[in-house]
Image 1 (spheres, rainbow, N blue to C red):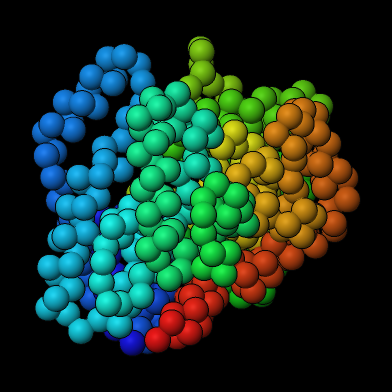
Image 2 (cartoon, rainbow, N blue to C red; image 1 turned 90 degrees about the horizontal axis):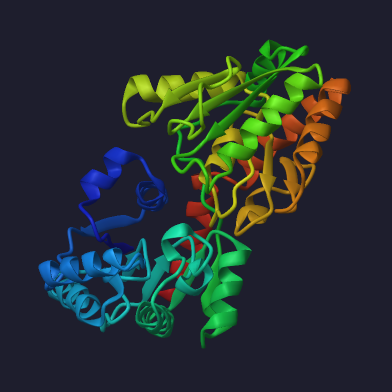
Length: 379
């Protein structure tokens, strides 16, 4: 089976960044599917829409040019021209955007983390959108859902926003969770070694993300502060950004900045911290899925996460972590951690089942197998 894989950007650049879109393509290749890349799509009237975006910014309103109809139709025309010279069986896109208005003989499939409607007033960049932008965004999403043969999402939350907000055949909408955007060849025996090396008298928490406030970095810091005040020696390791705080950081906070997974040094540092971590703490205020949850589980690290967006598809309560209601208190997180150290065998069991969830459900090999089955049904 030959797949015309559509990327908005240069697929070589995406591959180097080792983000989810790269792993989507690779997991299909690992299923003996041949990928033919259609990438580096150009935006029509780019300068005009850049100026339009700047004007909205001056008005302190968010704007996204990618869903402008003229740009979407330009994407479709570029894809059509390249498809004419390809012997492809299926068109597969990392996003609903470039295939919204594509008219071709091949079935169209996209695999993306959220719908436009699901993101409105959820992520900061989708908050306070002008009515024009909302109208065009929903029109784009509806066009893509009408046009496609399959719309695949990583979470039940995202799938439900498609069914609820758009006129779509529910049989088109499927759920296949993403995997860990890190290589993992660990075994159960490896996890036992990691568990044996983790200290039982002090706690290491990891917060990993680029957006400090959206992913609840401030809340994680408060949890670590309170744990230390309660007598449990706690470190908070922060990867991905510089904490946005007033004044100096407490000594128990260890910062690493942004670490690039594609560099050997960055990857080694991430792996080292994850190996030593007791819990990933992820009190996000908005999250479409969260591949970091899968990555943590691949090290036998349970996740303490807010139950927002698509997180509940990744994290099963008391199986590979603990889910908290968005309004739950700092004390509720602290209680779970304190209880885990008071009964450390229960923590080990949770860590083992976290790795089991990664092995059976939250990895790209499983995802590739599921998606391949769906593609075979279309041909």
